[in-house]
Image (cartoon, rainbow, N blue to C red; front, top):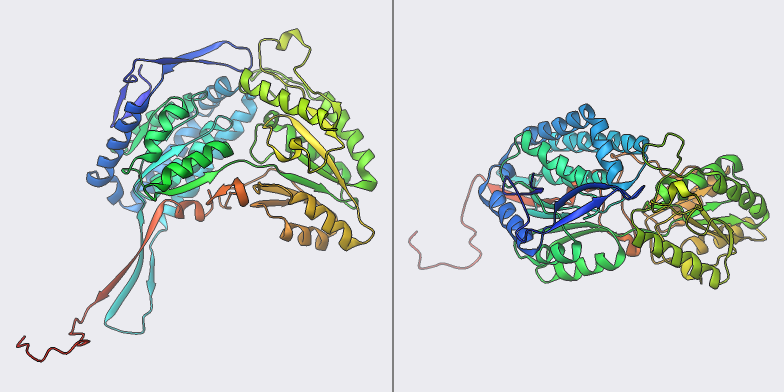
Amino acid sequence: MPELFIDGEWRDAASGETRTITCPADGTEVAVVSEGGARDALDAVAAARRAFDEGPWPHTPAPERAALLRAVADRLEAEKDEVARLESLDTGKRFYESQLDVDDIASVFRHFADLAAADAGRVVDTGMSHISSRIVHEPVGVCVLITPWNYPLLQTSWKVAPALAAGNTFVLKPSELTPHTAIWLMKTLDDLGLPKGAANLVLGAGAEVGPPMTESPDVDLVSFTGGLVSGKRVMVAAAETVKRVALELGGKNPNVIFADADLDAAIDNAVTAVFLDSGQVCSAGARLIVEEEIHDQVVAELVRRAKAIRLGGPFDDSAETGPLISAEHRAKVQAYVDQAVEEGATLLAGGGAPDDPELANGYYFEPTVLDGATTTMSAVQEESFGPVVTVETFSGATRDEAEDAAIAIANDTIYGLAGAVWSENAGRAERVASRLRHGTIWINDYHPYVPQAEWGGMKQSGIGRELGLAGLEEYRETKHIWHNTRPARADWFADEGSDA
């Protein structure tokens, strides 16, 4: 069947072009899907514009919008294994991890359903009995939602759920590499009765499909999750029409371990922080920053654990992590590691594709440890988005000097998405966390999140927040309505000749 969903109808791309989707784990064909282009993108924007300006969704009562979001969550739970299978075939991710992702996605839809149902605005006390002053929330309008390939449906839910909760219409542009759960979501929304044109789906390459939408004067908001270079282009394109922009652009995230930490827990979490999903996580703890006196102990155990990680496909029960998304991405990670070694880092584990004939058809990359790194190296400053950790050290003659040194290293990056600090001293942990310039800080933990808490970055990791209450505010306009129930003349200017 056709895979583009525009104005309530499934259709082929206007150009007739298609794209073959393959599984990164073994190169097998998953499906052939329509490859949209600029014309399809503009058709989708026009449909979303009509649906917002003339359709019922923006005026649908909040409890009804909430009910639809809860119905999506119910459907996710009922079809969990099928959705997880689609995700794993597209990404190569372990089926078990995809199942966990589906649980998270259902929670996201329920969270925004609760927020939508509770939205009553607020009354402002003006101190005047004849004045009603109200703050109300309205949808922004037409939203373009551009999502990445590493957590396809989860990242989509972070945008679609609040957009619908607020009463917006939207065009979704998923990664061209991982379209199938986005297709599932559109089918589900259509089946649940979302009005025609409120949700639209355009598949295709970002360079072809993105600019017509981000530049369009009919679009009111662009929410983009992806790389820094592409995010800058989105921001420039949106500036011409002064549309809202929400950007999540990745990170180069520090994981700081002090000597007084629970080292067993810290090292175990350091392994998860960087090697989960083969490092294809925007919040991956790719910079391990270790107090000098425990460096040798931490690195020795980290290397041992990295070498023991079992690679395999999504349905291999013995696998602990999977492949990278594509051959092109693996080449990028390889170049990153090679450059790090040229700059003086010491390769202690991994460093390339595994020498295993059973994995030869997939895009696997060994868990890699680079020691002796410094903030002057490109390997420390640039995001590899692969299973690669760099190790830096810090020290100080006093408590304050050690903390200052760790903080200086951790903050020496253009990014500011996430980070962690490990210490059994609660005061130290809180002091360091308060000074780290990153949007999420874990203390004695790494990676967990809940949809009730905001997510987003500082500095060049992006603009705006997803999840929490702020994640809904991104998709709402705030309006003040002043109602004088006892109108009278202002008499600001003299009006001596009036007989009124």
